[in-house]
Image (cartoon, rainbow, N blue to C red; front, side, top):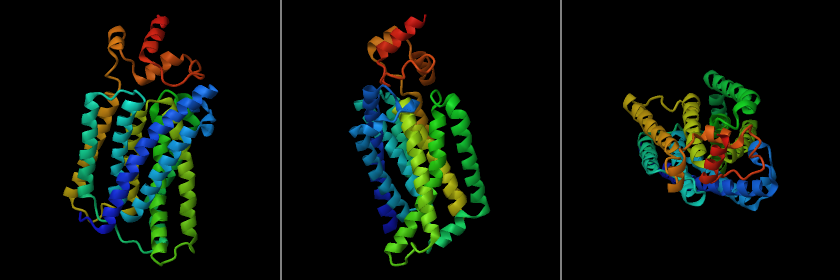
Length: 348
């Protein structure tokens, strides 16, 4: 793939976006903890006290800056180039969580970070050229093709099932529920962001696209999807370890976004089988890196903790420490390993 001036601008914007978004996870998490400690009601169980916490708003502003940079990047470069670079936000988030939130990153997690970077580079090198788009109406035609409408319908149905059936039952014990909602809505928001960003870019270039209702429709979709994403991302961050939420969210979000882009924009049309295979292999490397980050996140404990009791899986430790799910409702989310050990001994 030749790196045009627009692609380079999009590439740099995507890199800066990943740095801001990765840092925002940590800042917001610290804000959520402060709010829970002050009010006694966590966001994961329906609390909204974090809205009064300045640190949470600092994290939100940081995320907004990152999202704006990401938004502009989509106007300059194809989604298959911009989206995989989100892996860098995982690295930023995992490293900062290790030092600031004391959520330990195993040495193998460093290998996972390297794999994320390597896979992203492979995808970037073999990413297809973006098709030239001259009006928002052209994007509307792509968005209303039968194949993409079927994808949109499937996403909406899955989101409703997750929200009304799985959230009440498994939302606080299975990280895939909250992150699944975020990722599904995220794939639609990226397509709308791409459409809106292209419309604004054309408008700034002198071809006014604001006179078309399609532009405003895409803006409404973006707002709806982003609000939904933020709500359930807050719940996921408050309920589960940041080092788990970030990579799982990235894998699901990137997979669904690439799928949506391939369906809507026909990114792989005209590409050689070798390039497509390279992109798939690159994504598998990224996926493997994120899984490695996930499975090794709790391997390193303090010496005293390692000597007294064995680590628990995320879902099991959540159930043991929270009992029926209400015991920790008024506690700060982080529980020191020694306290987990004592609580576990009390159960016996």
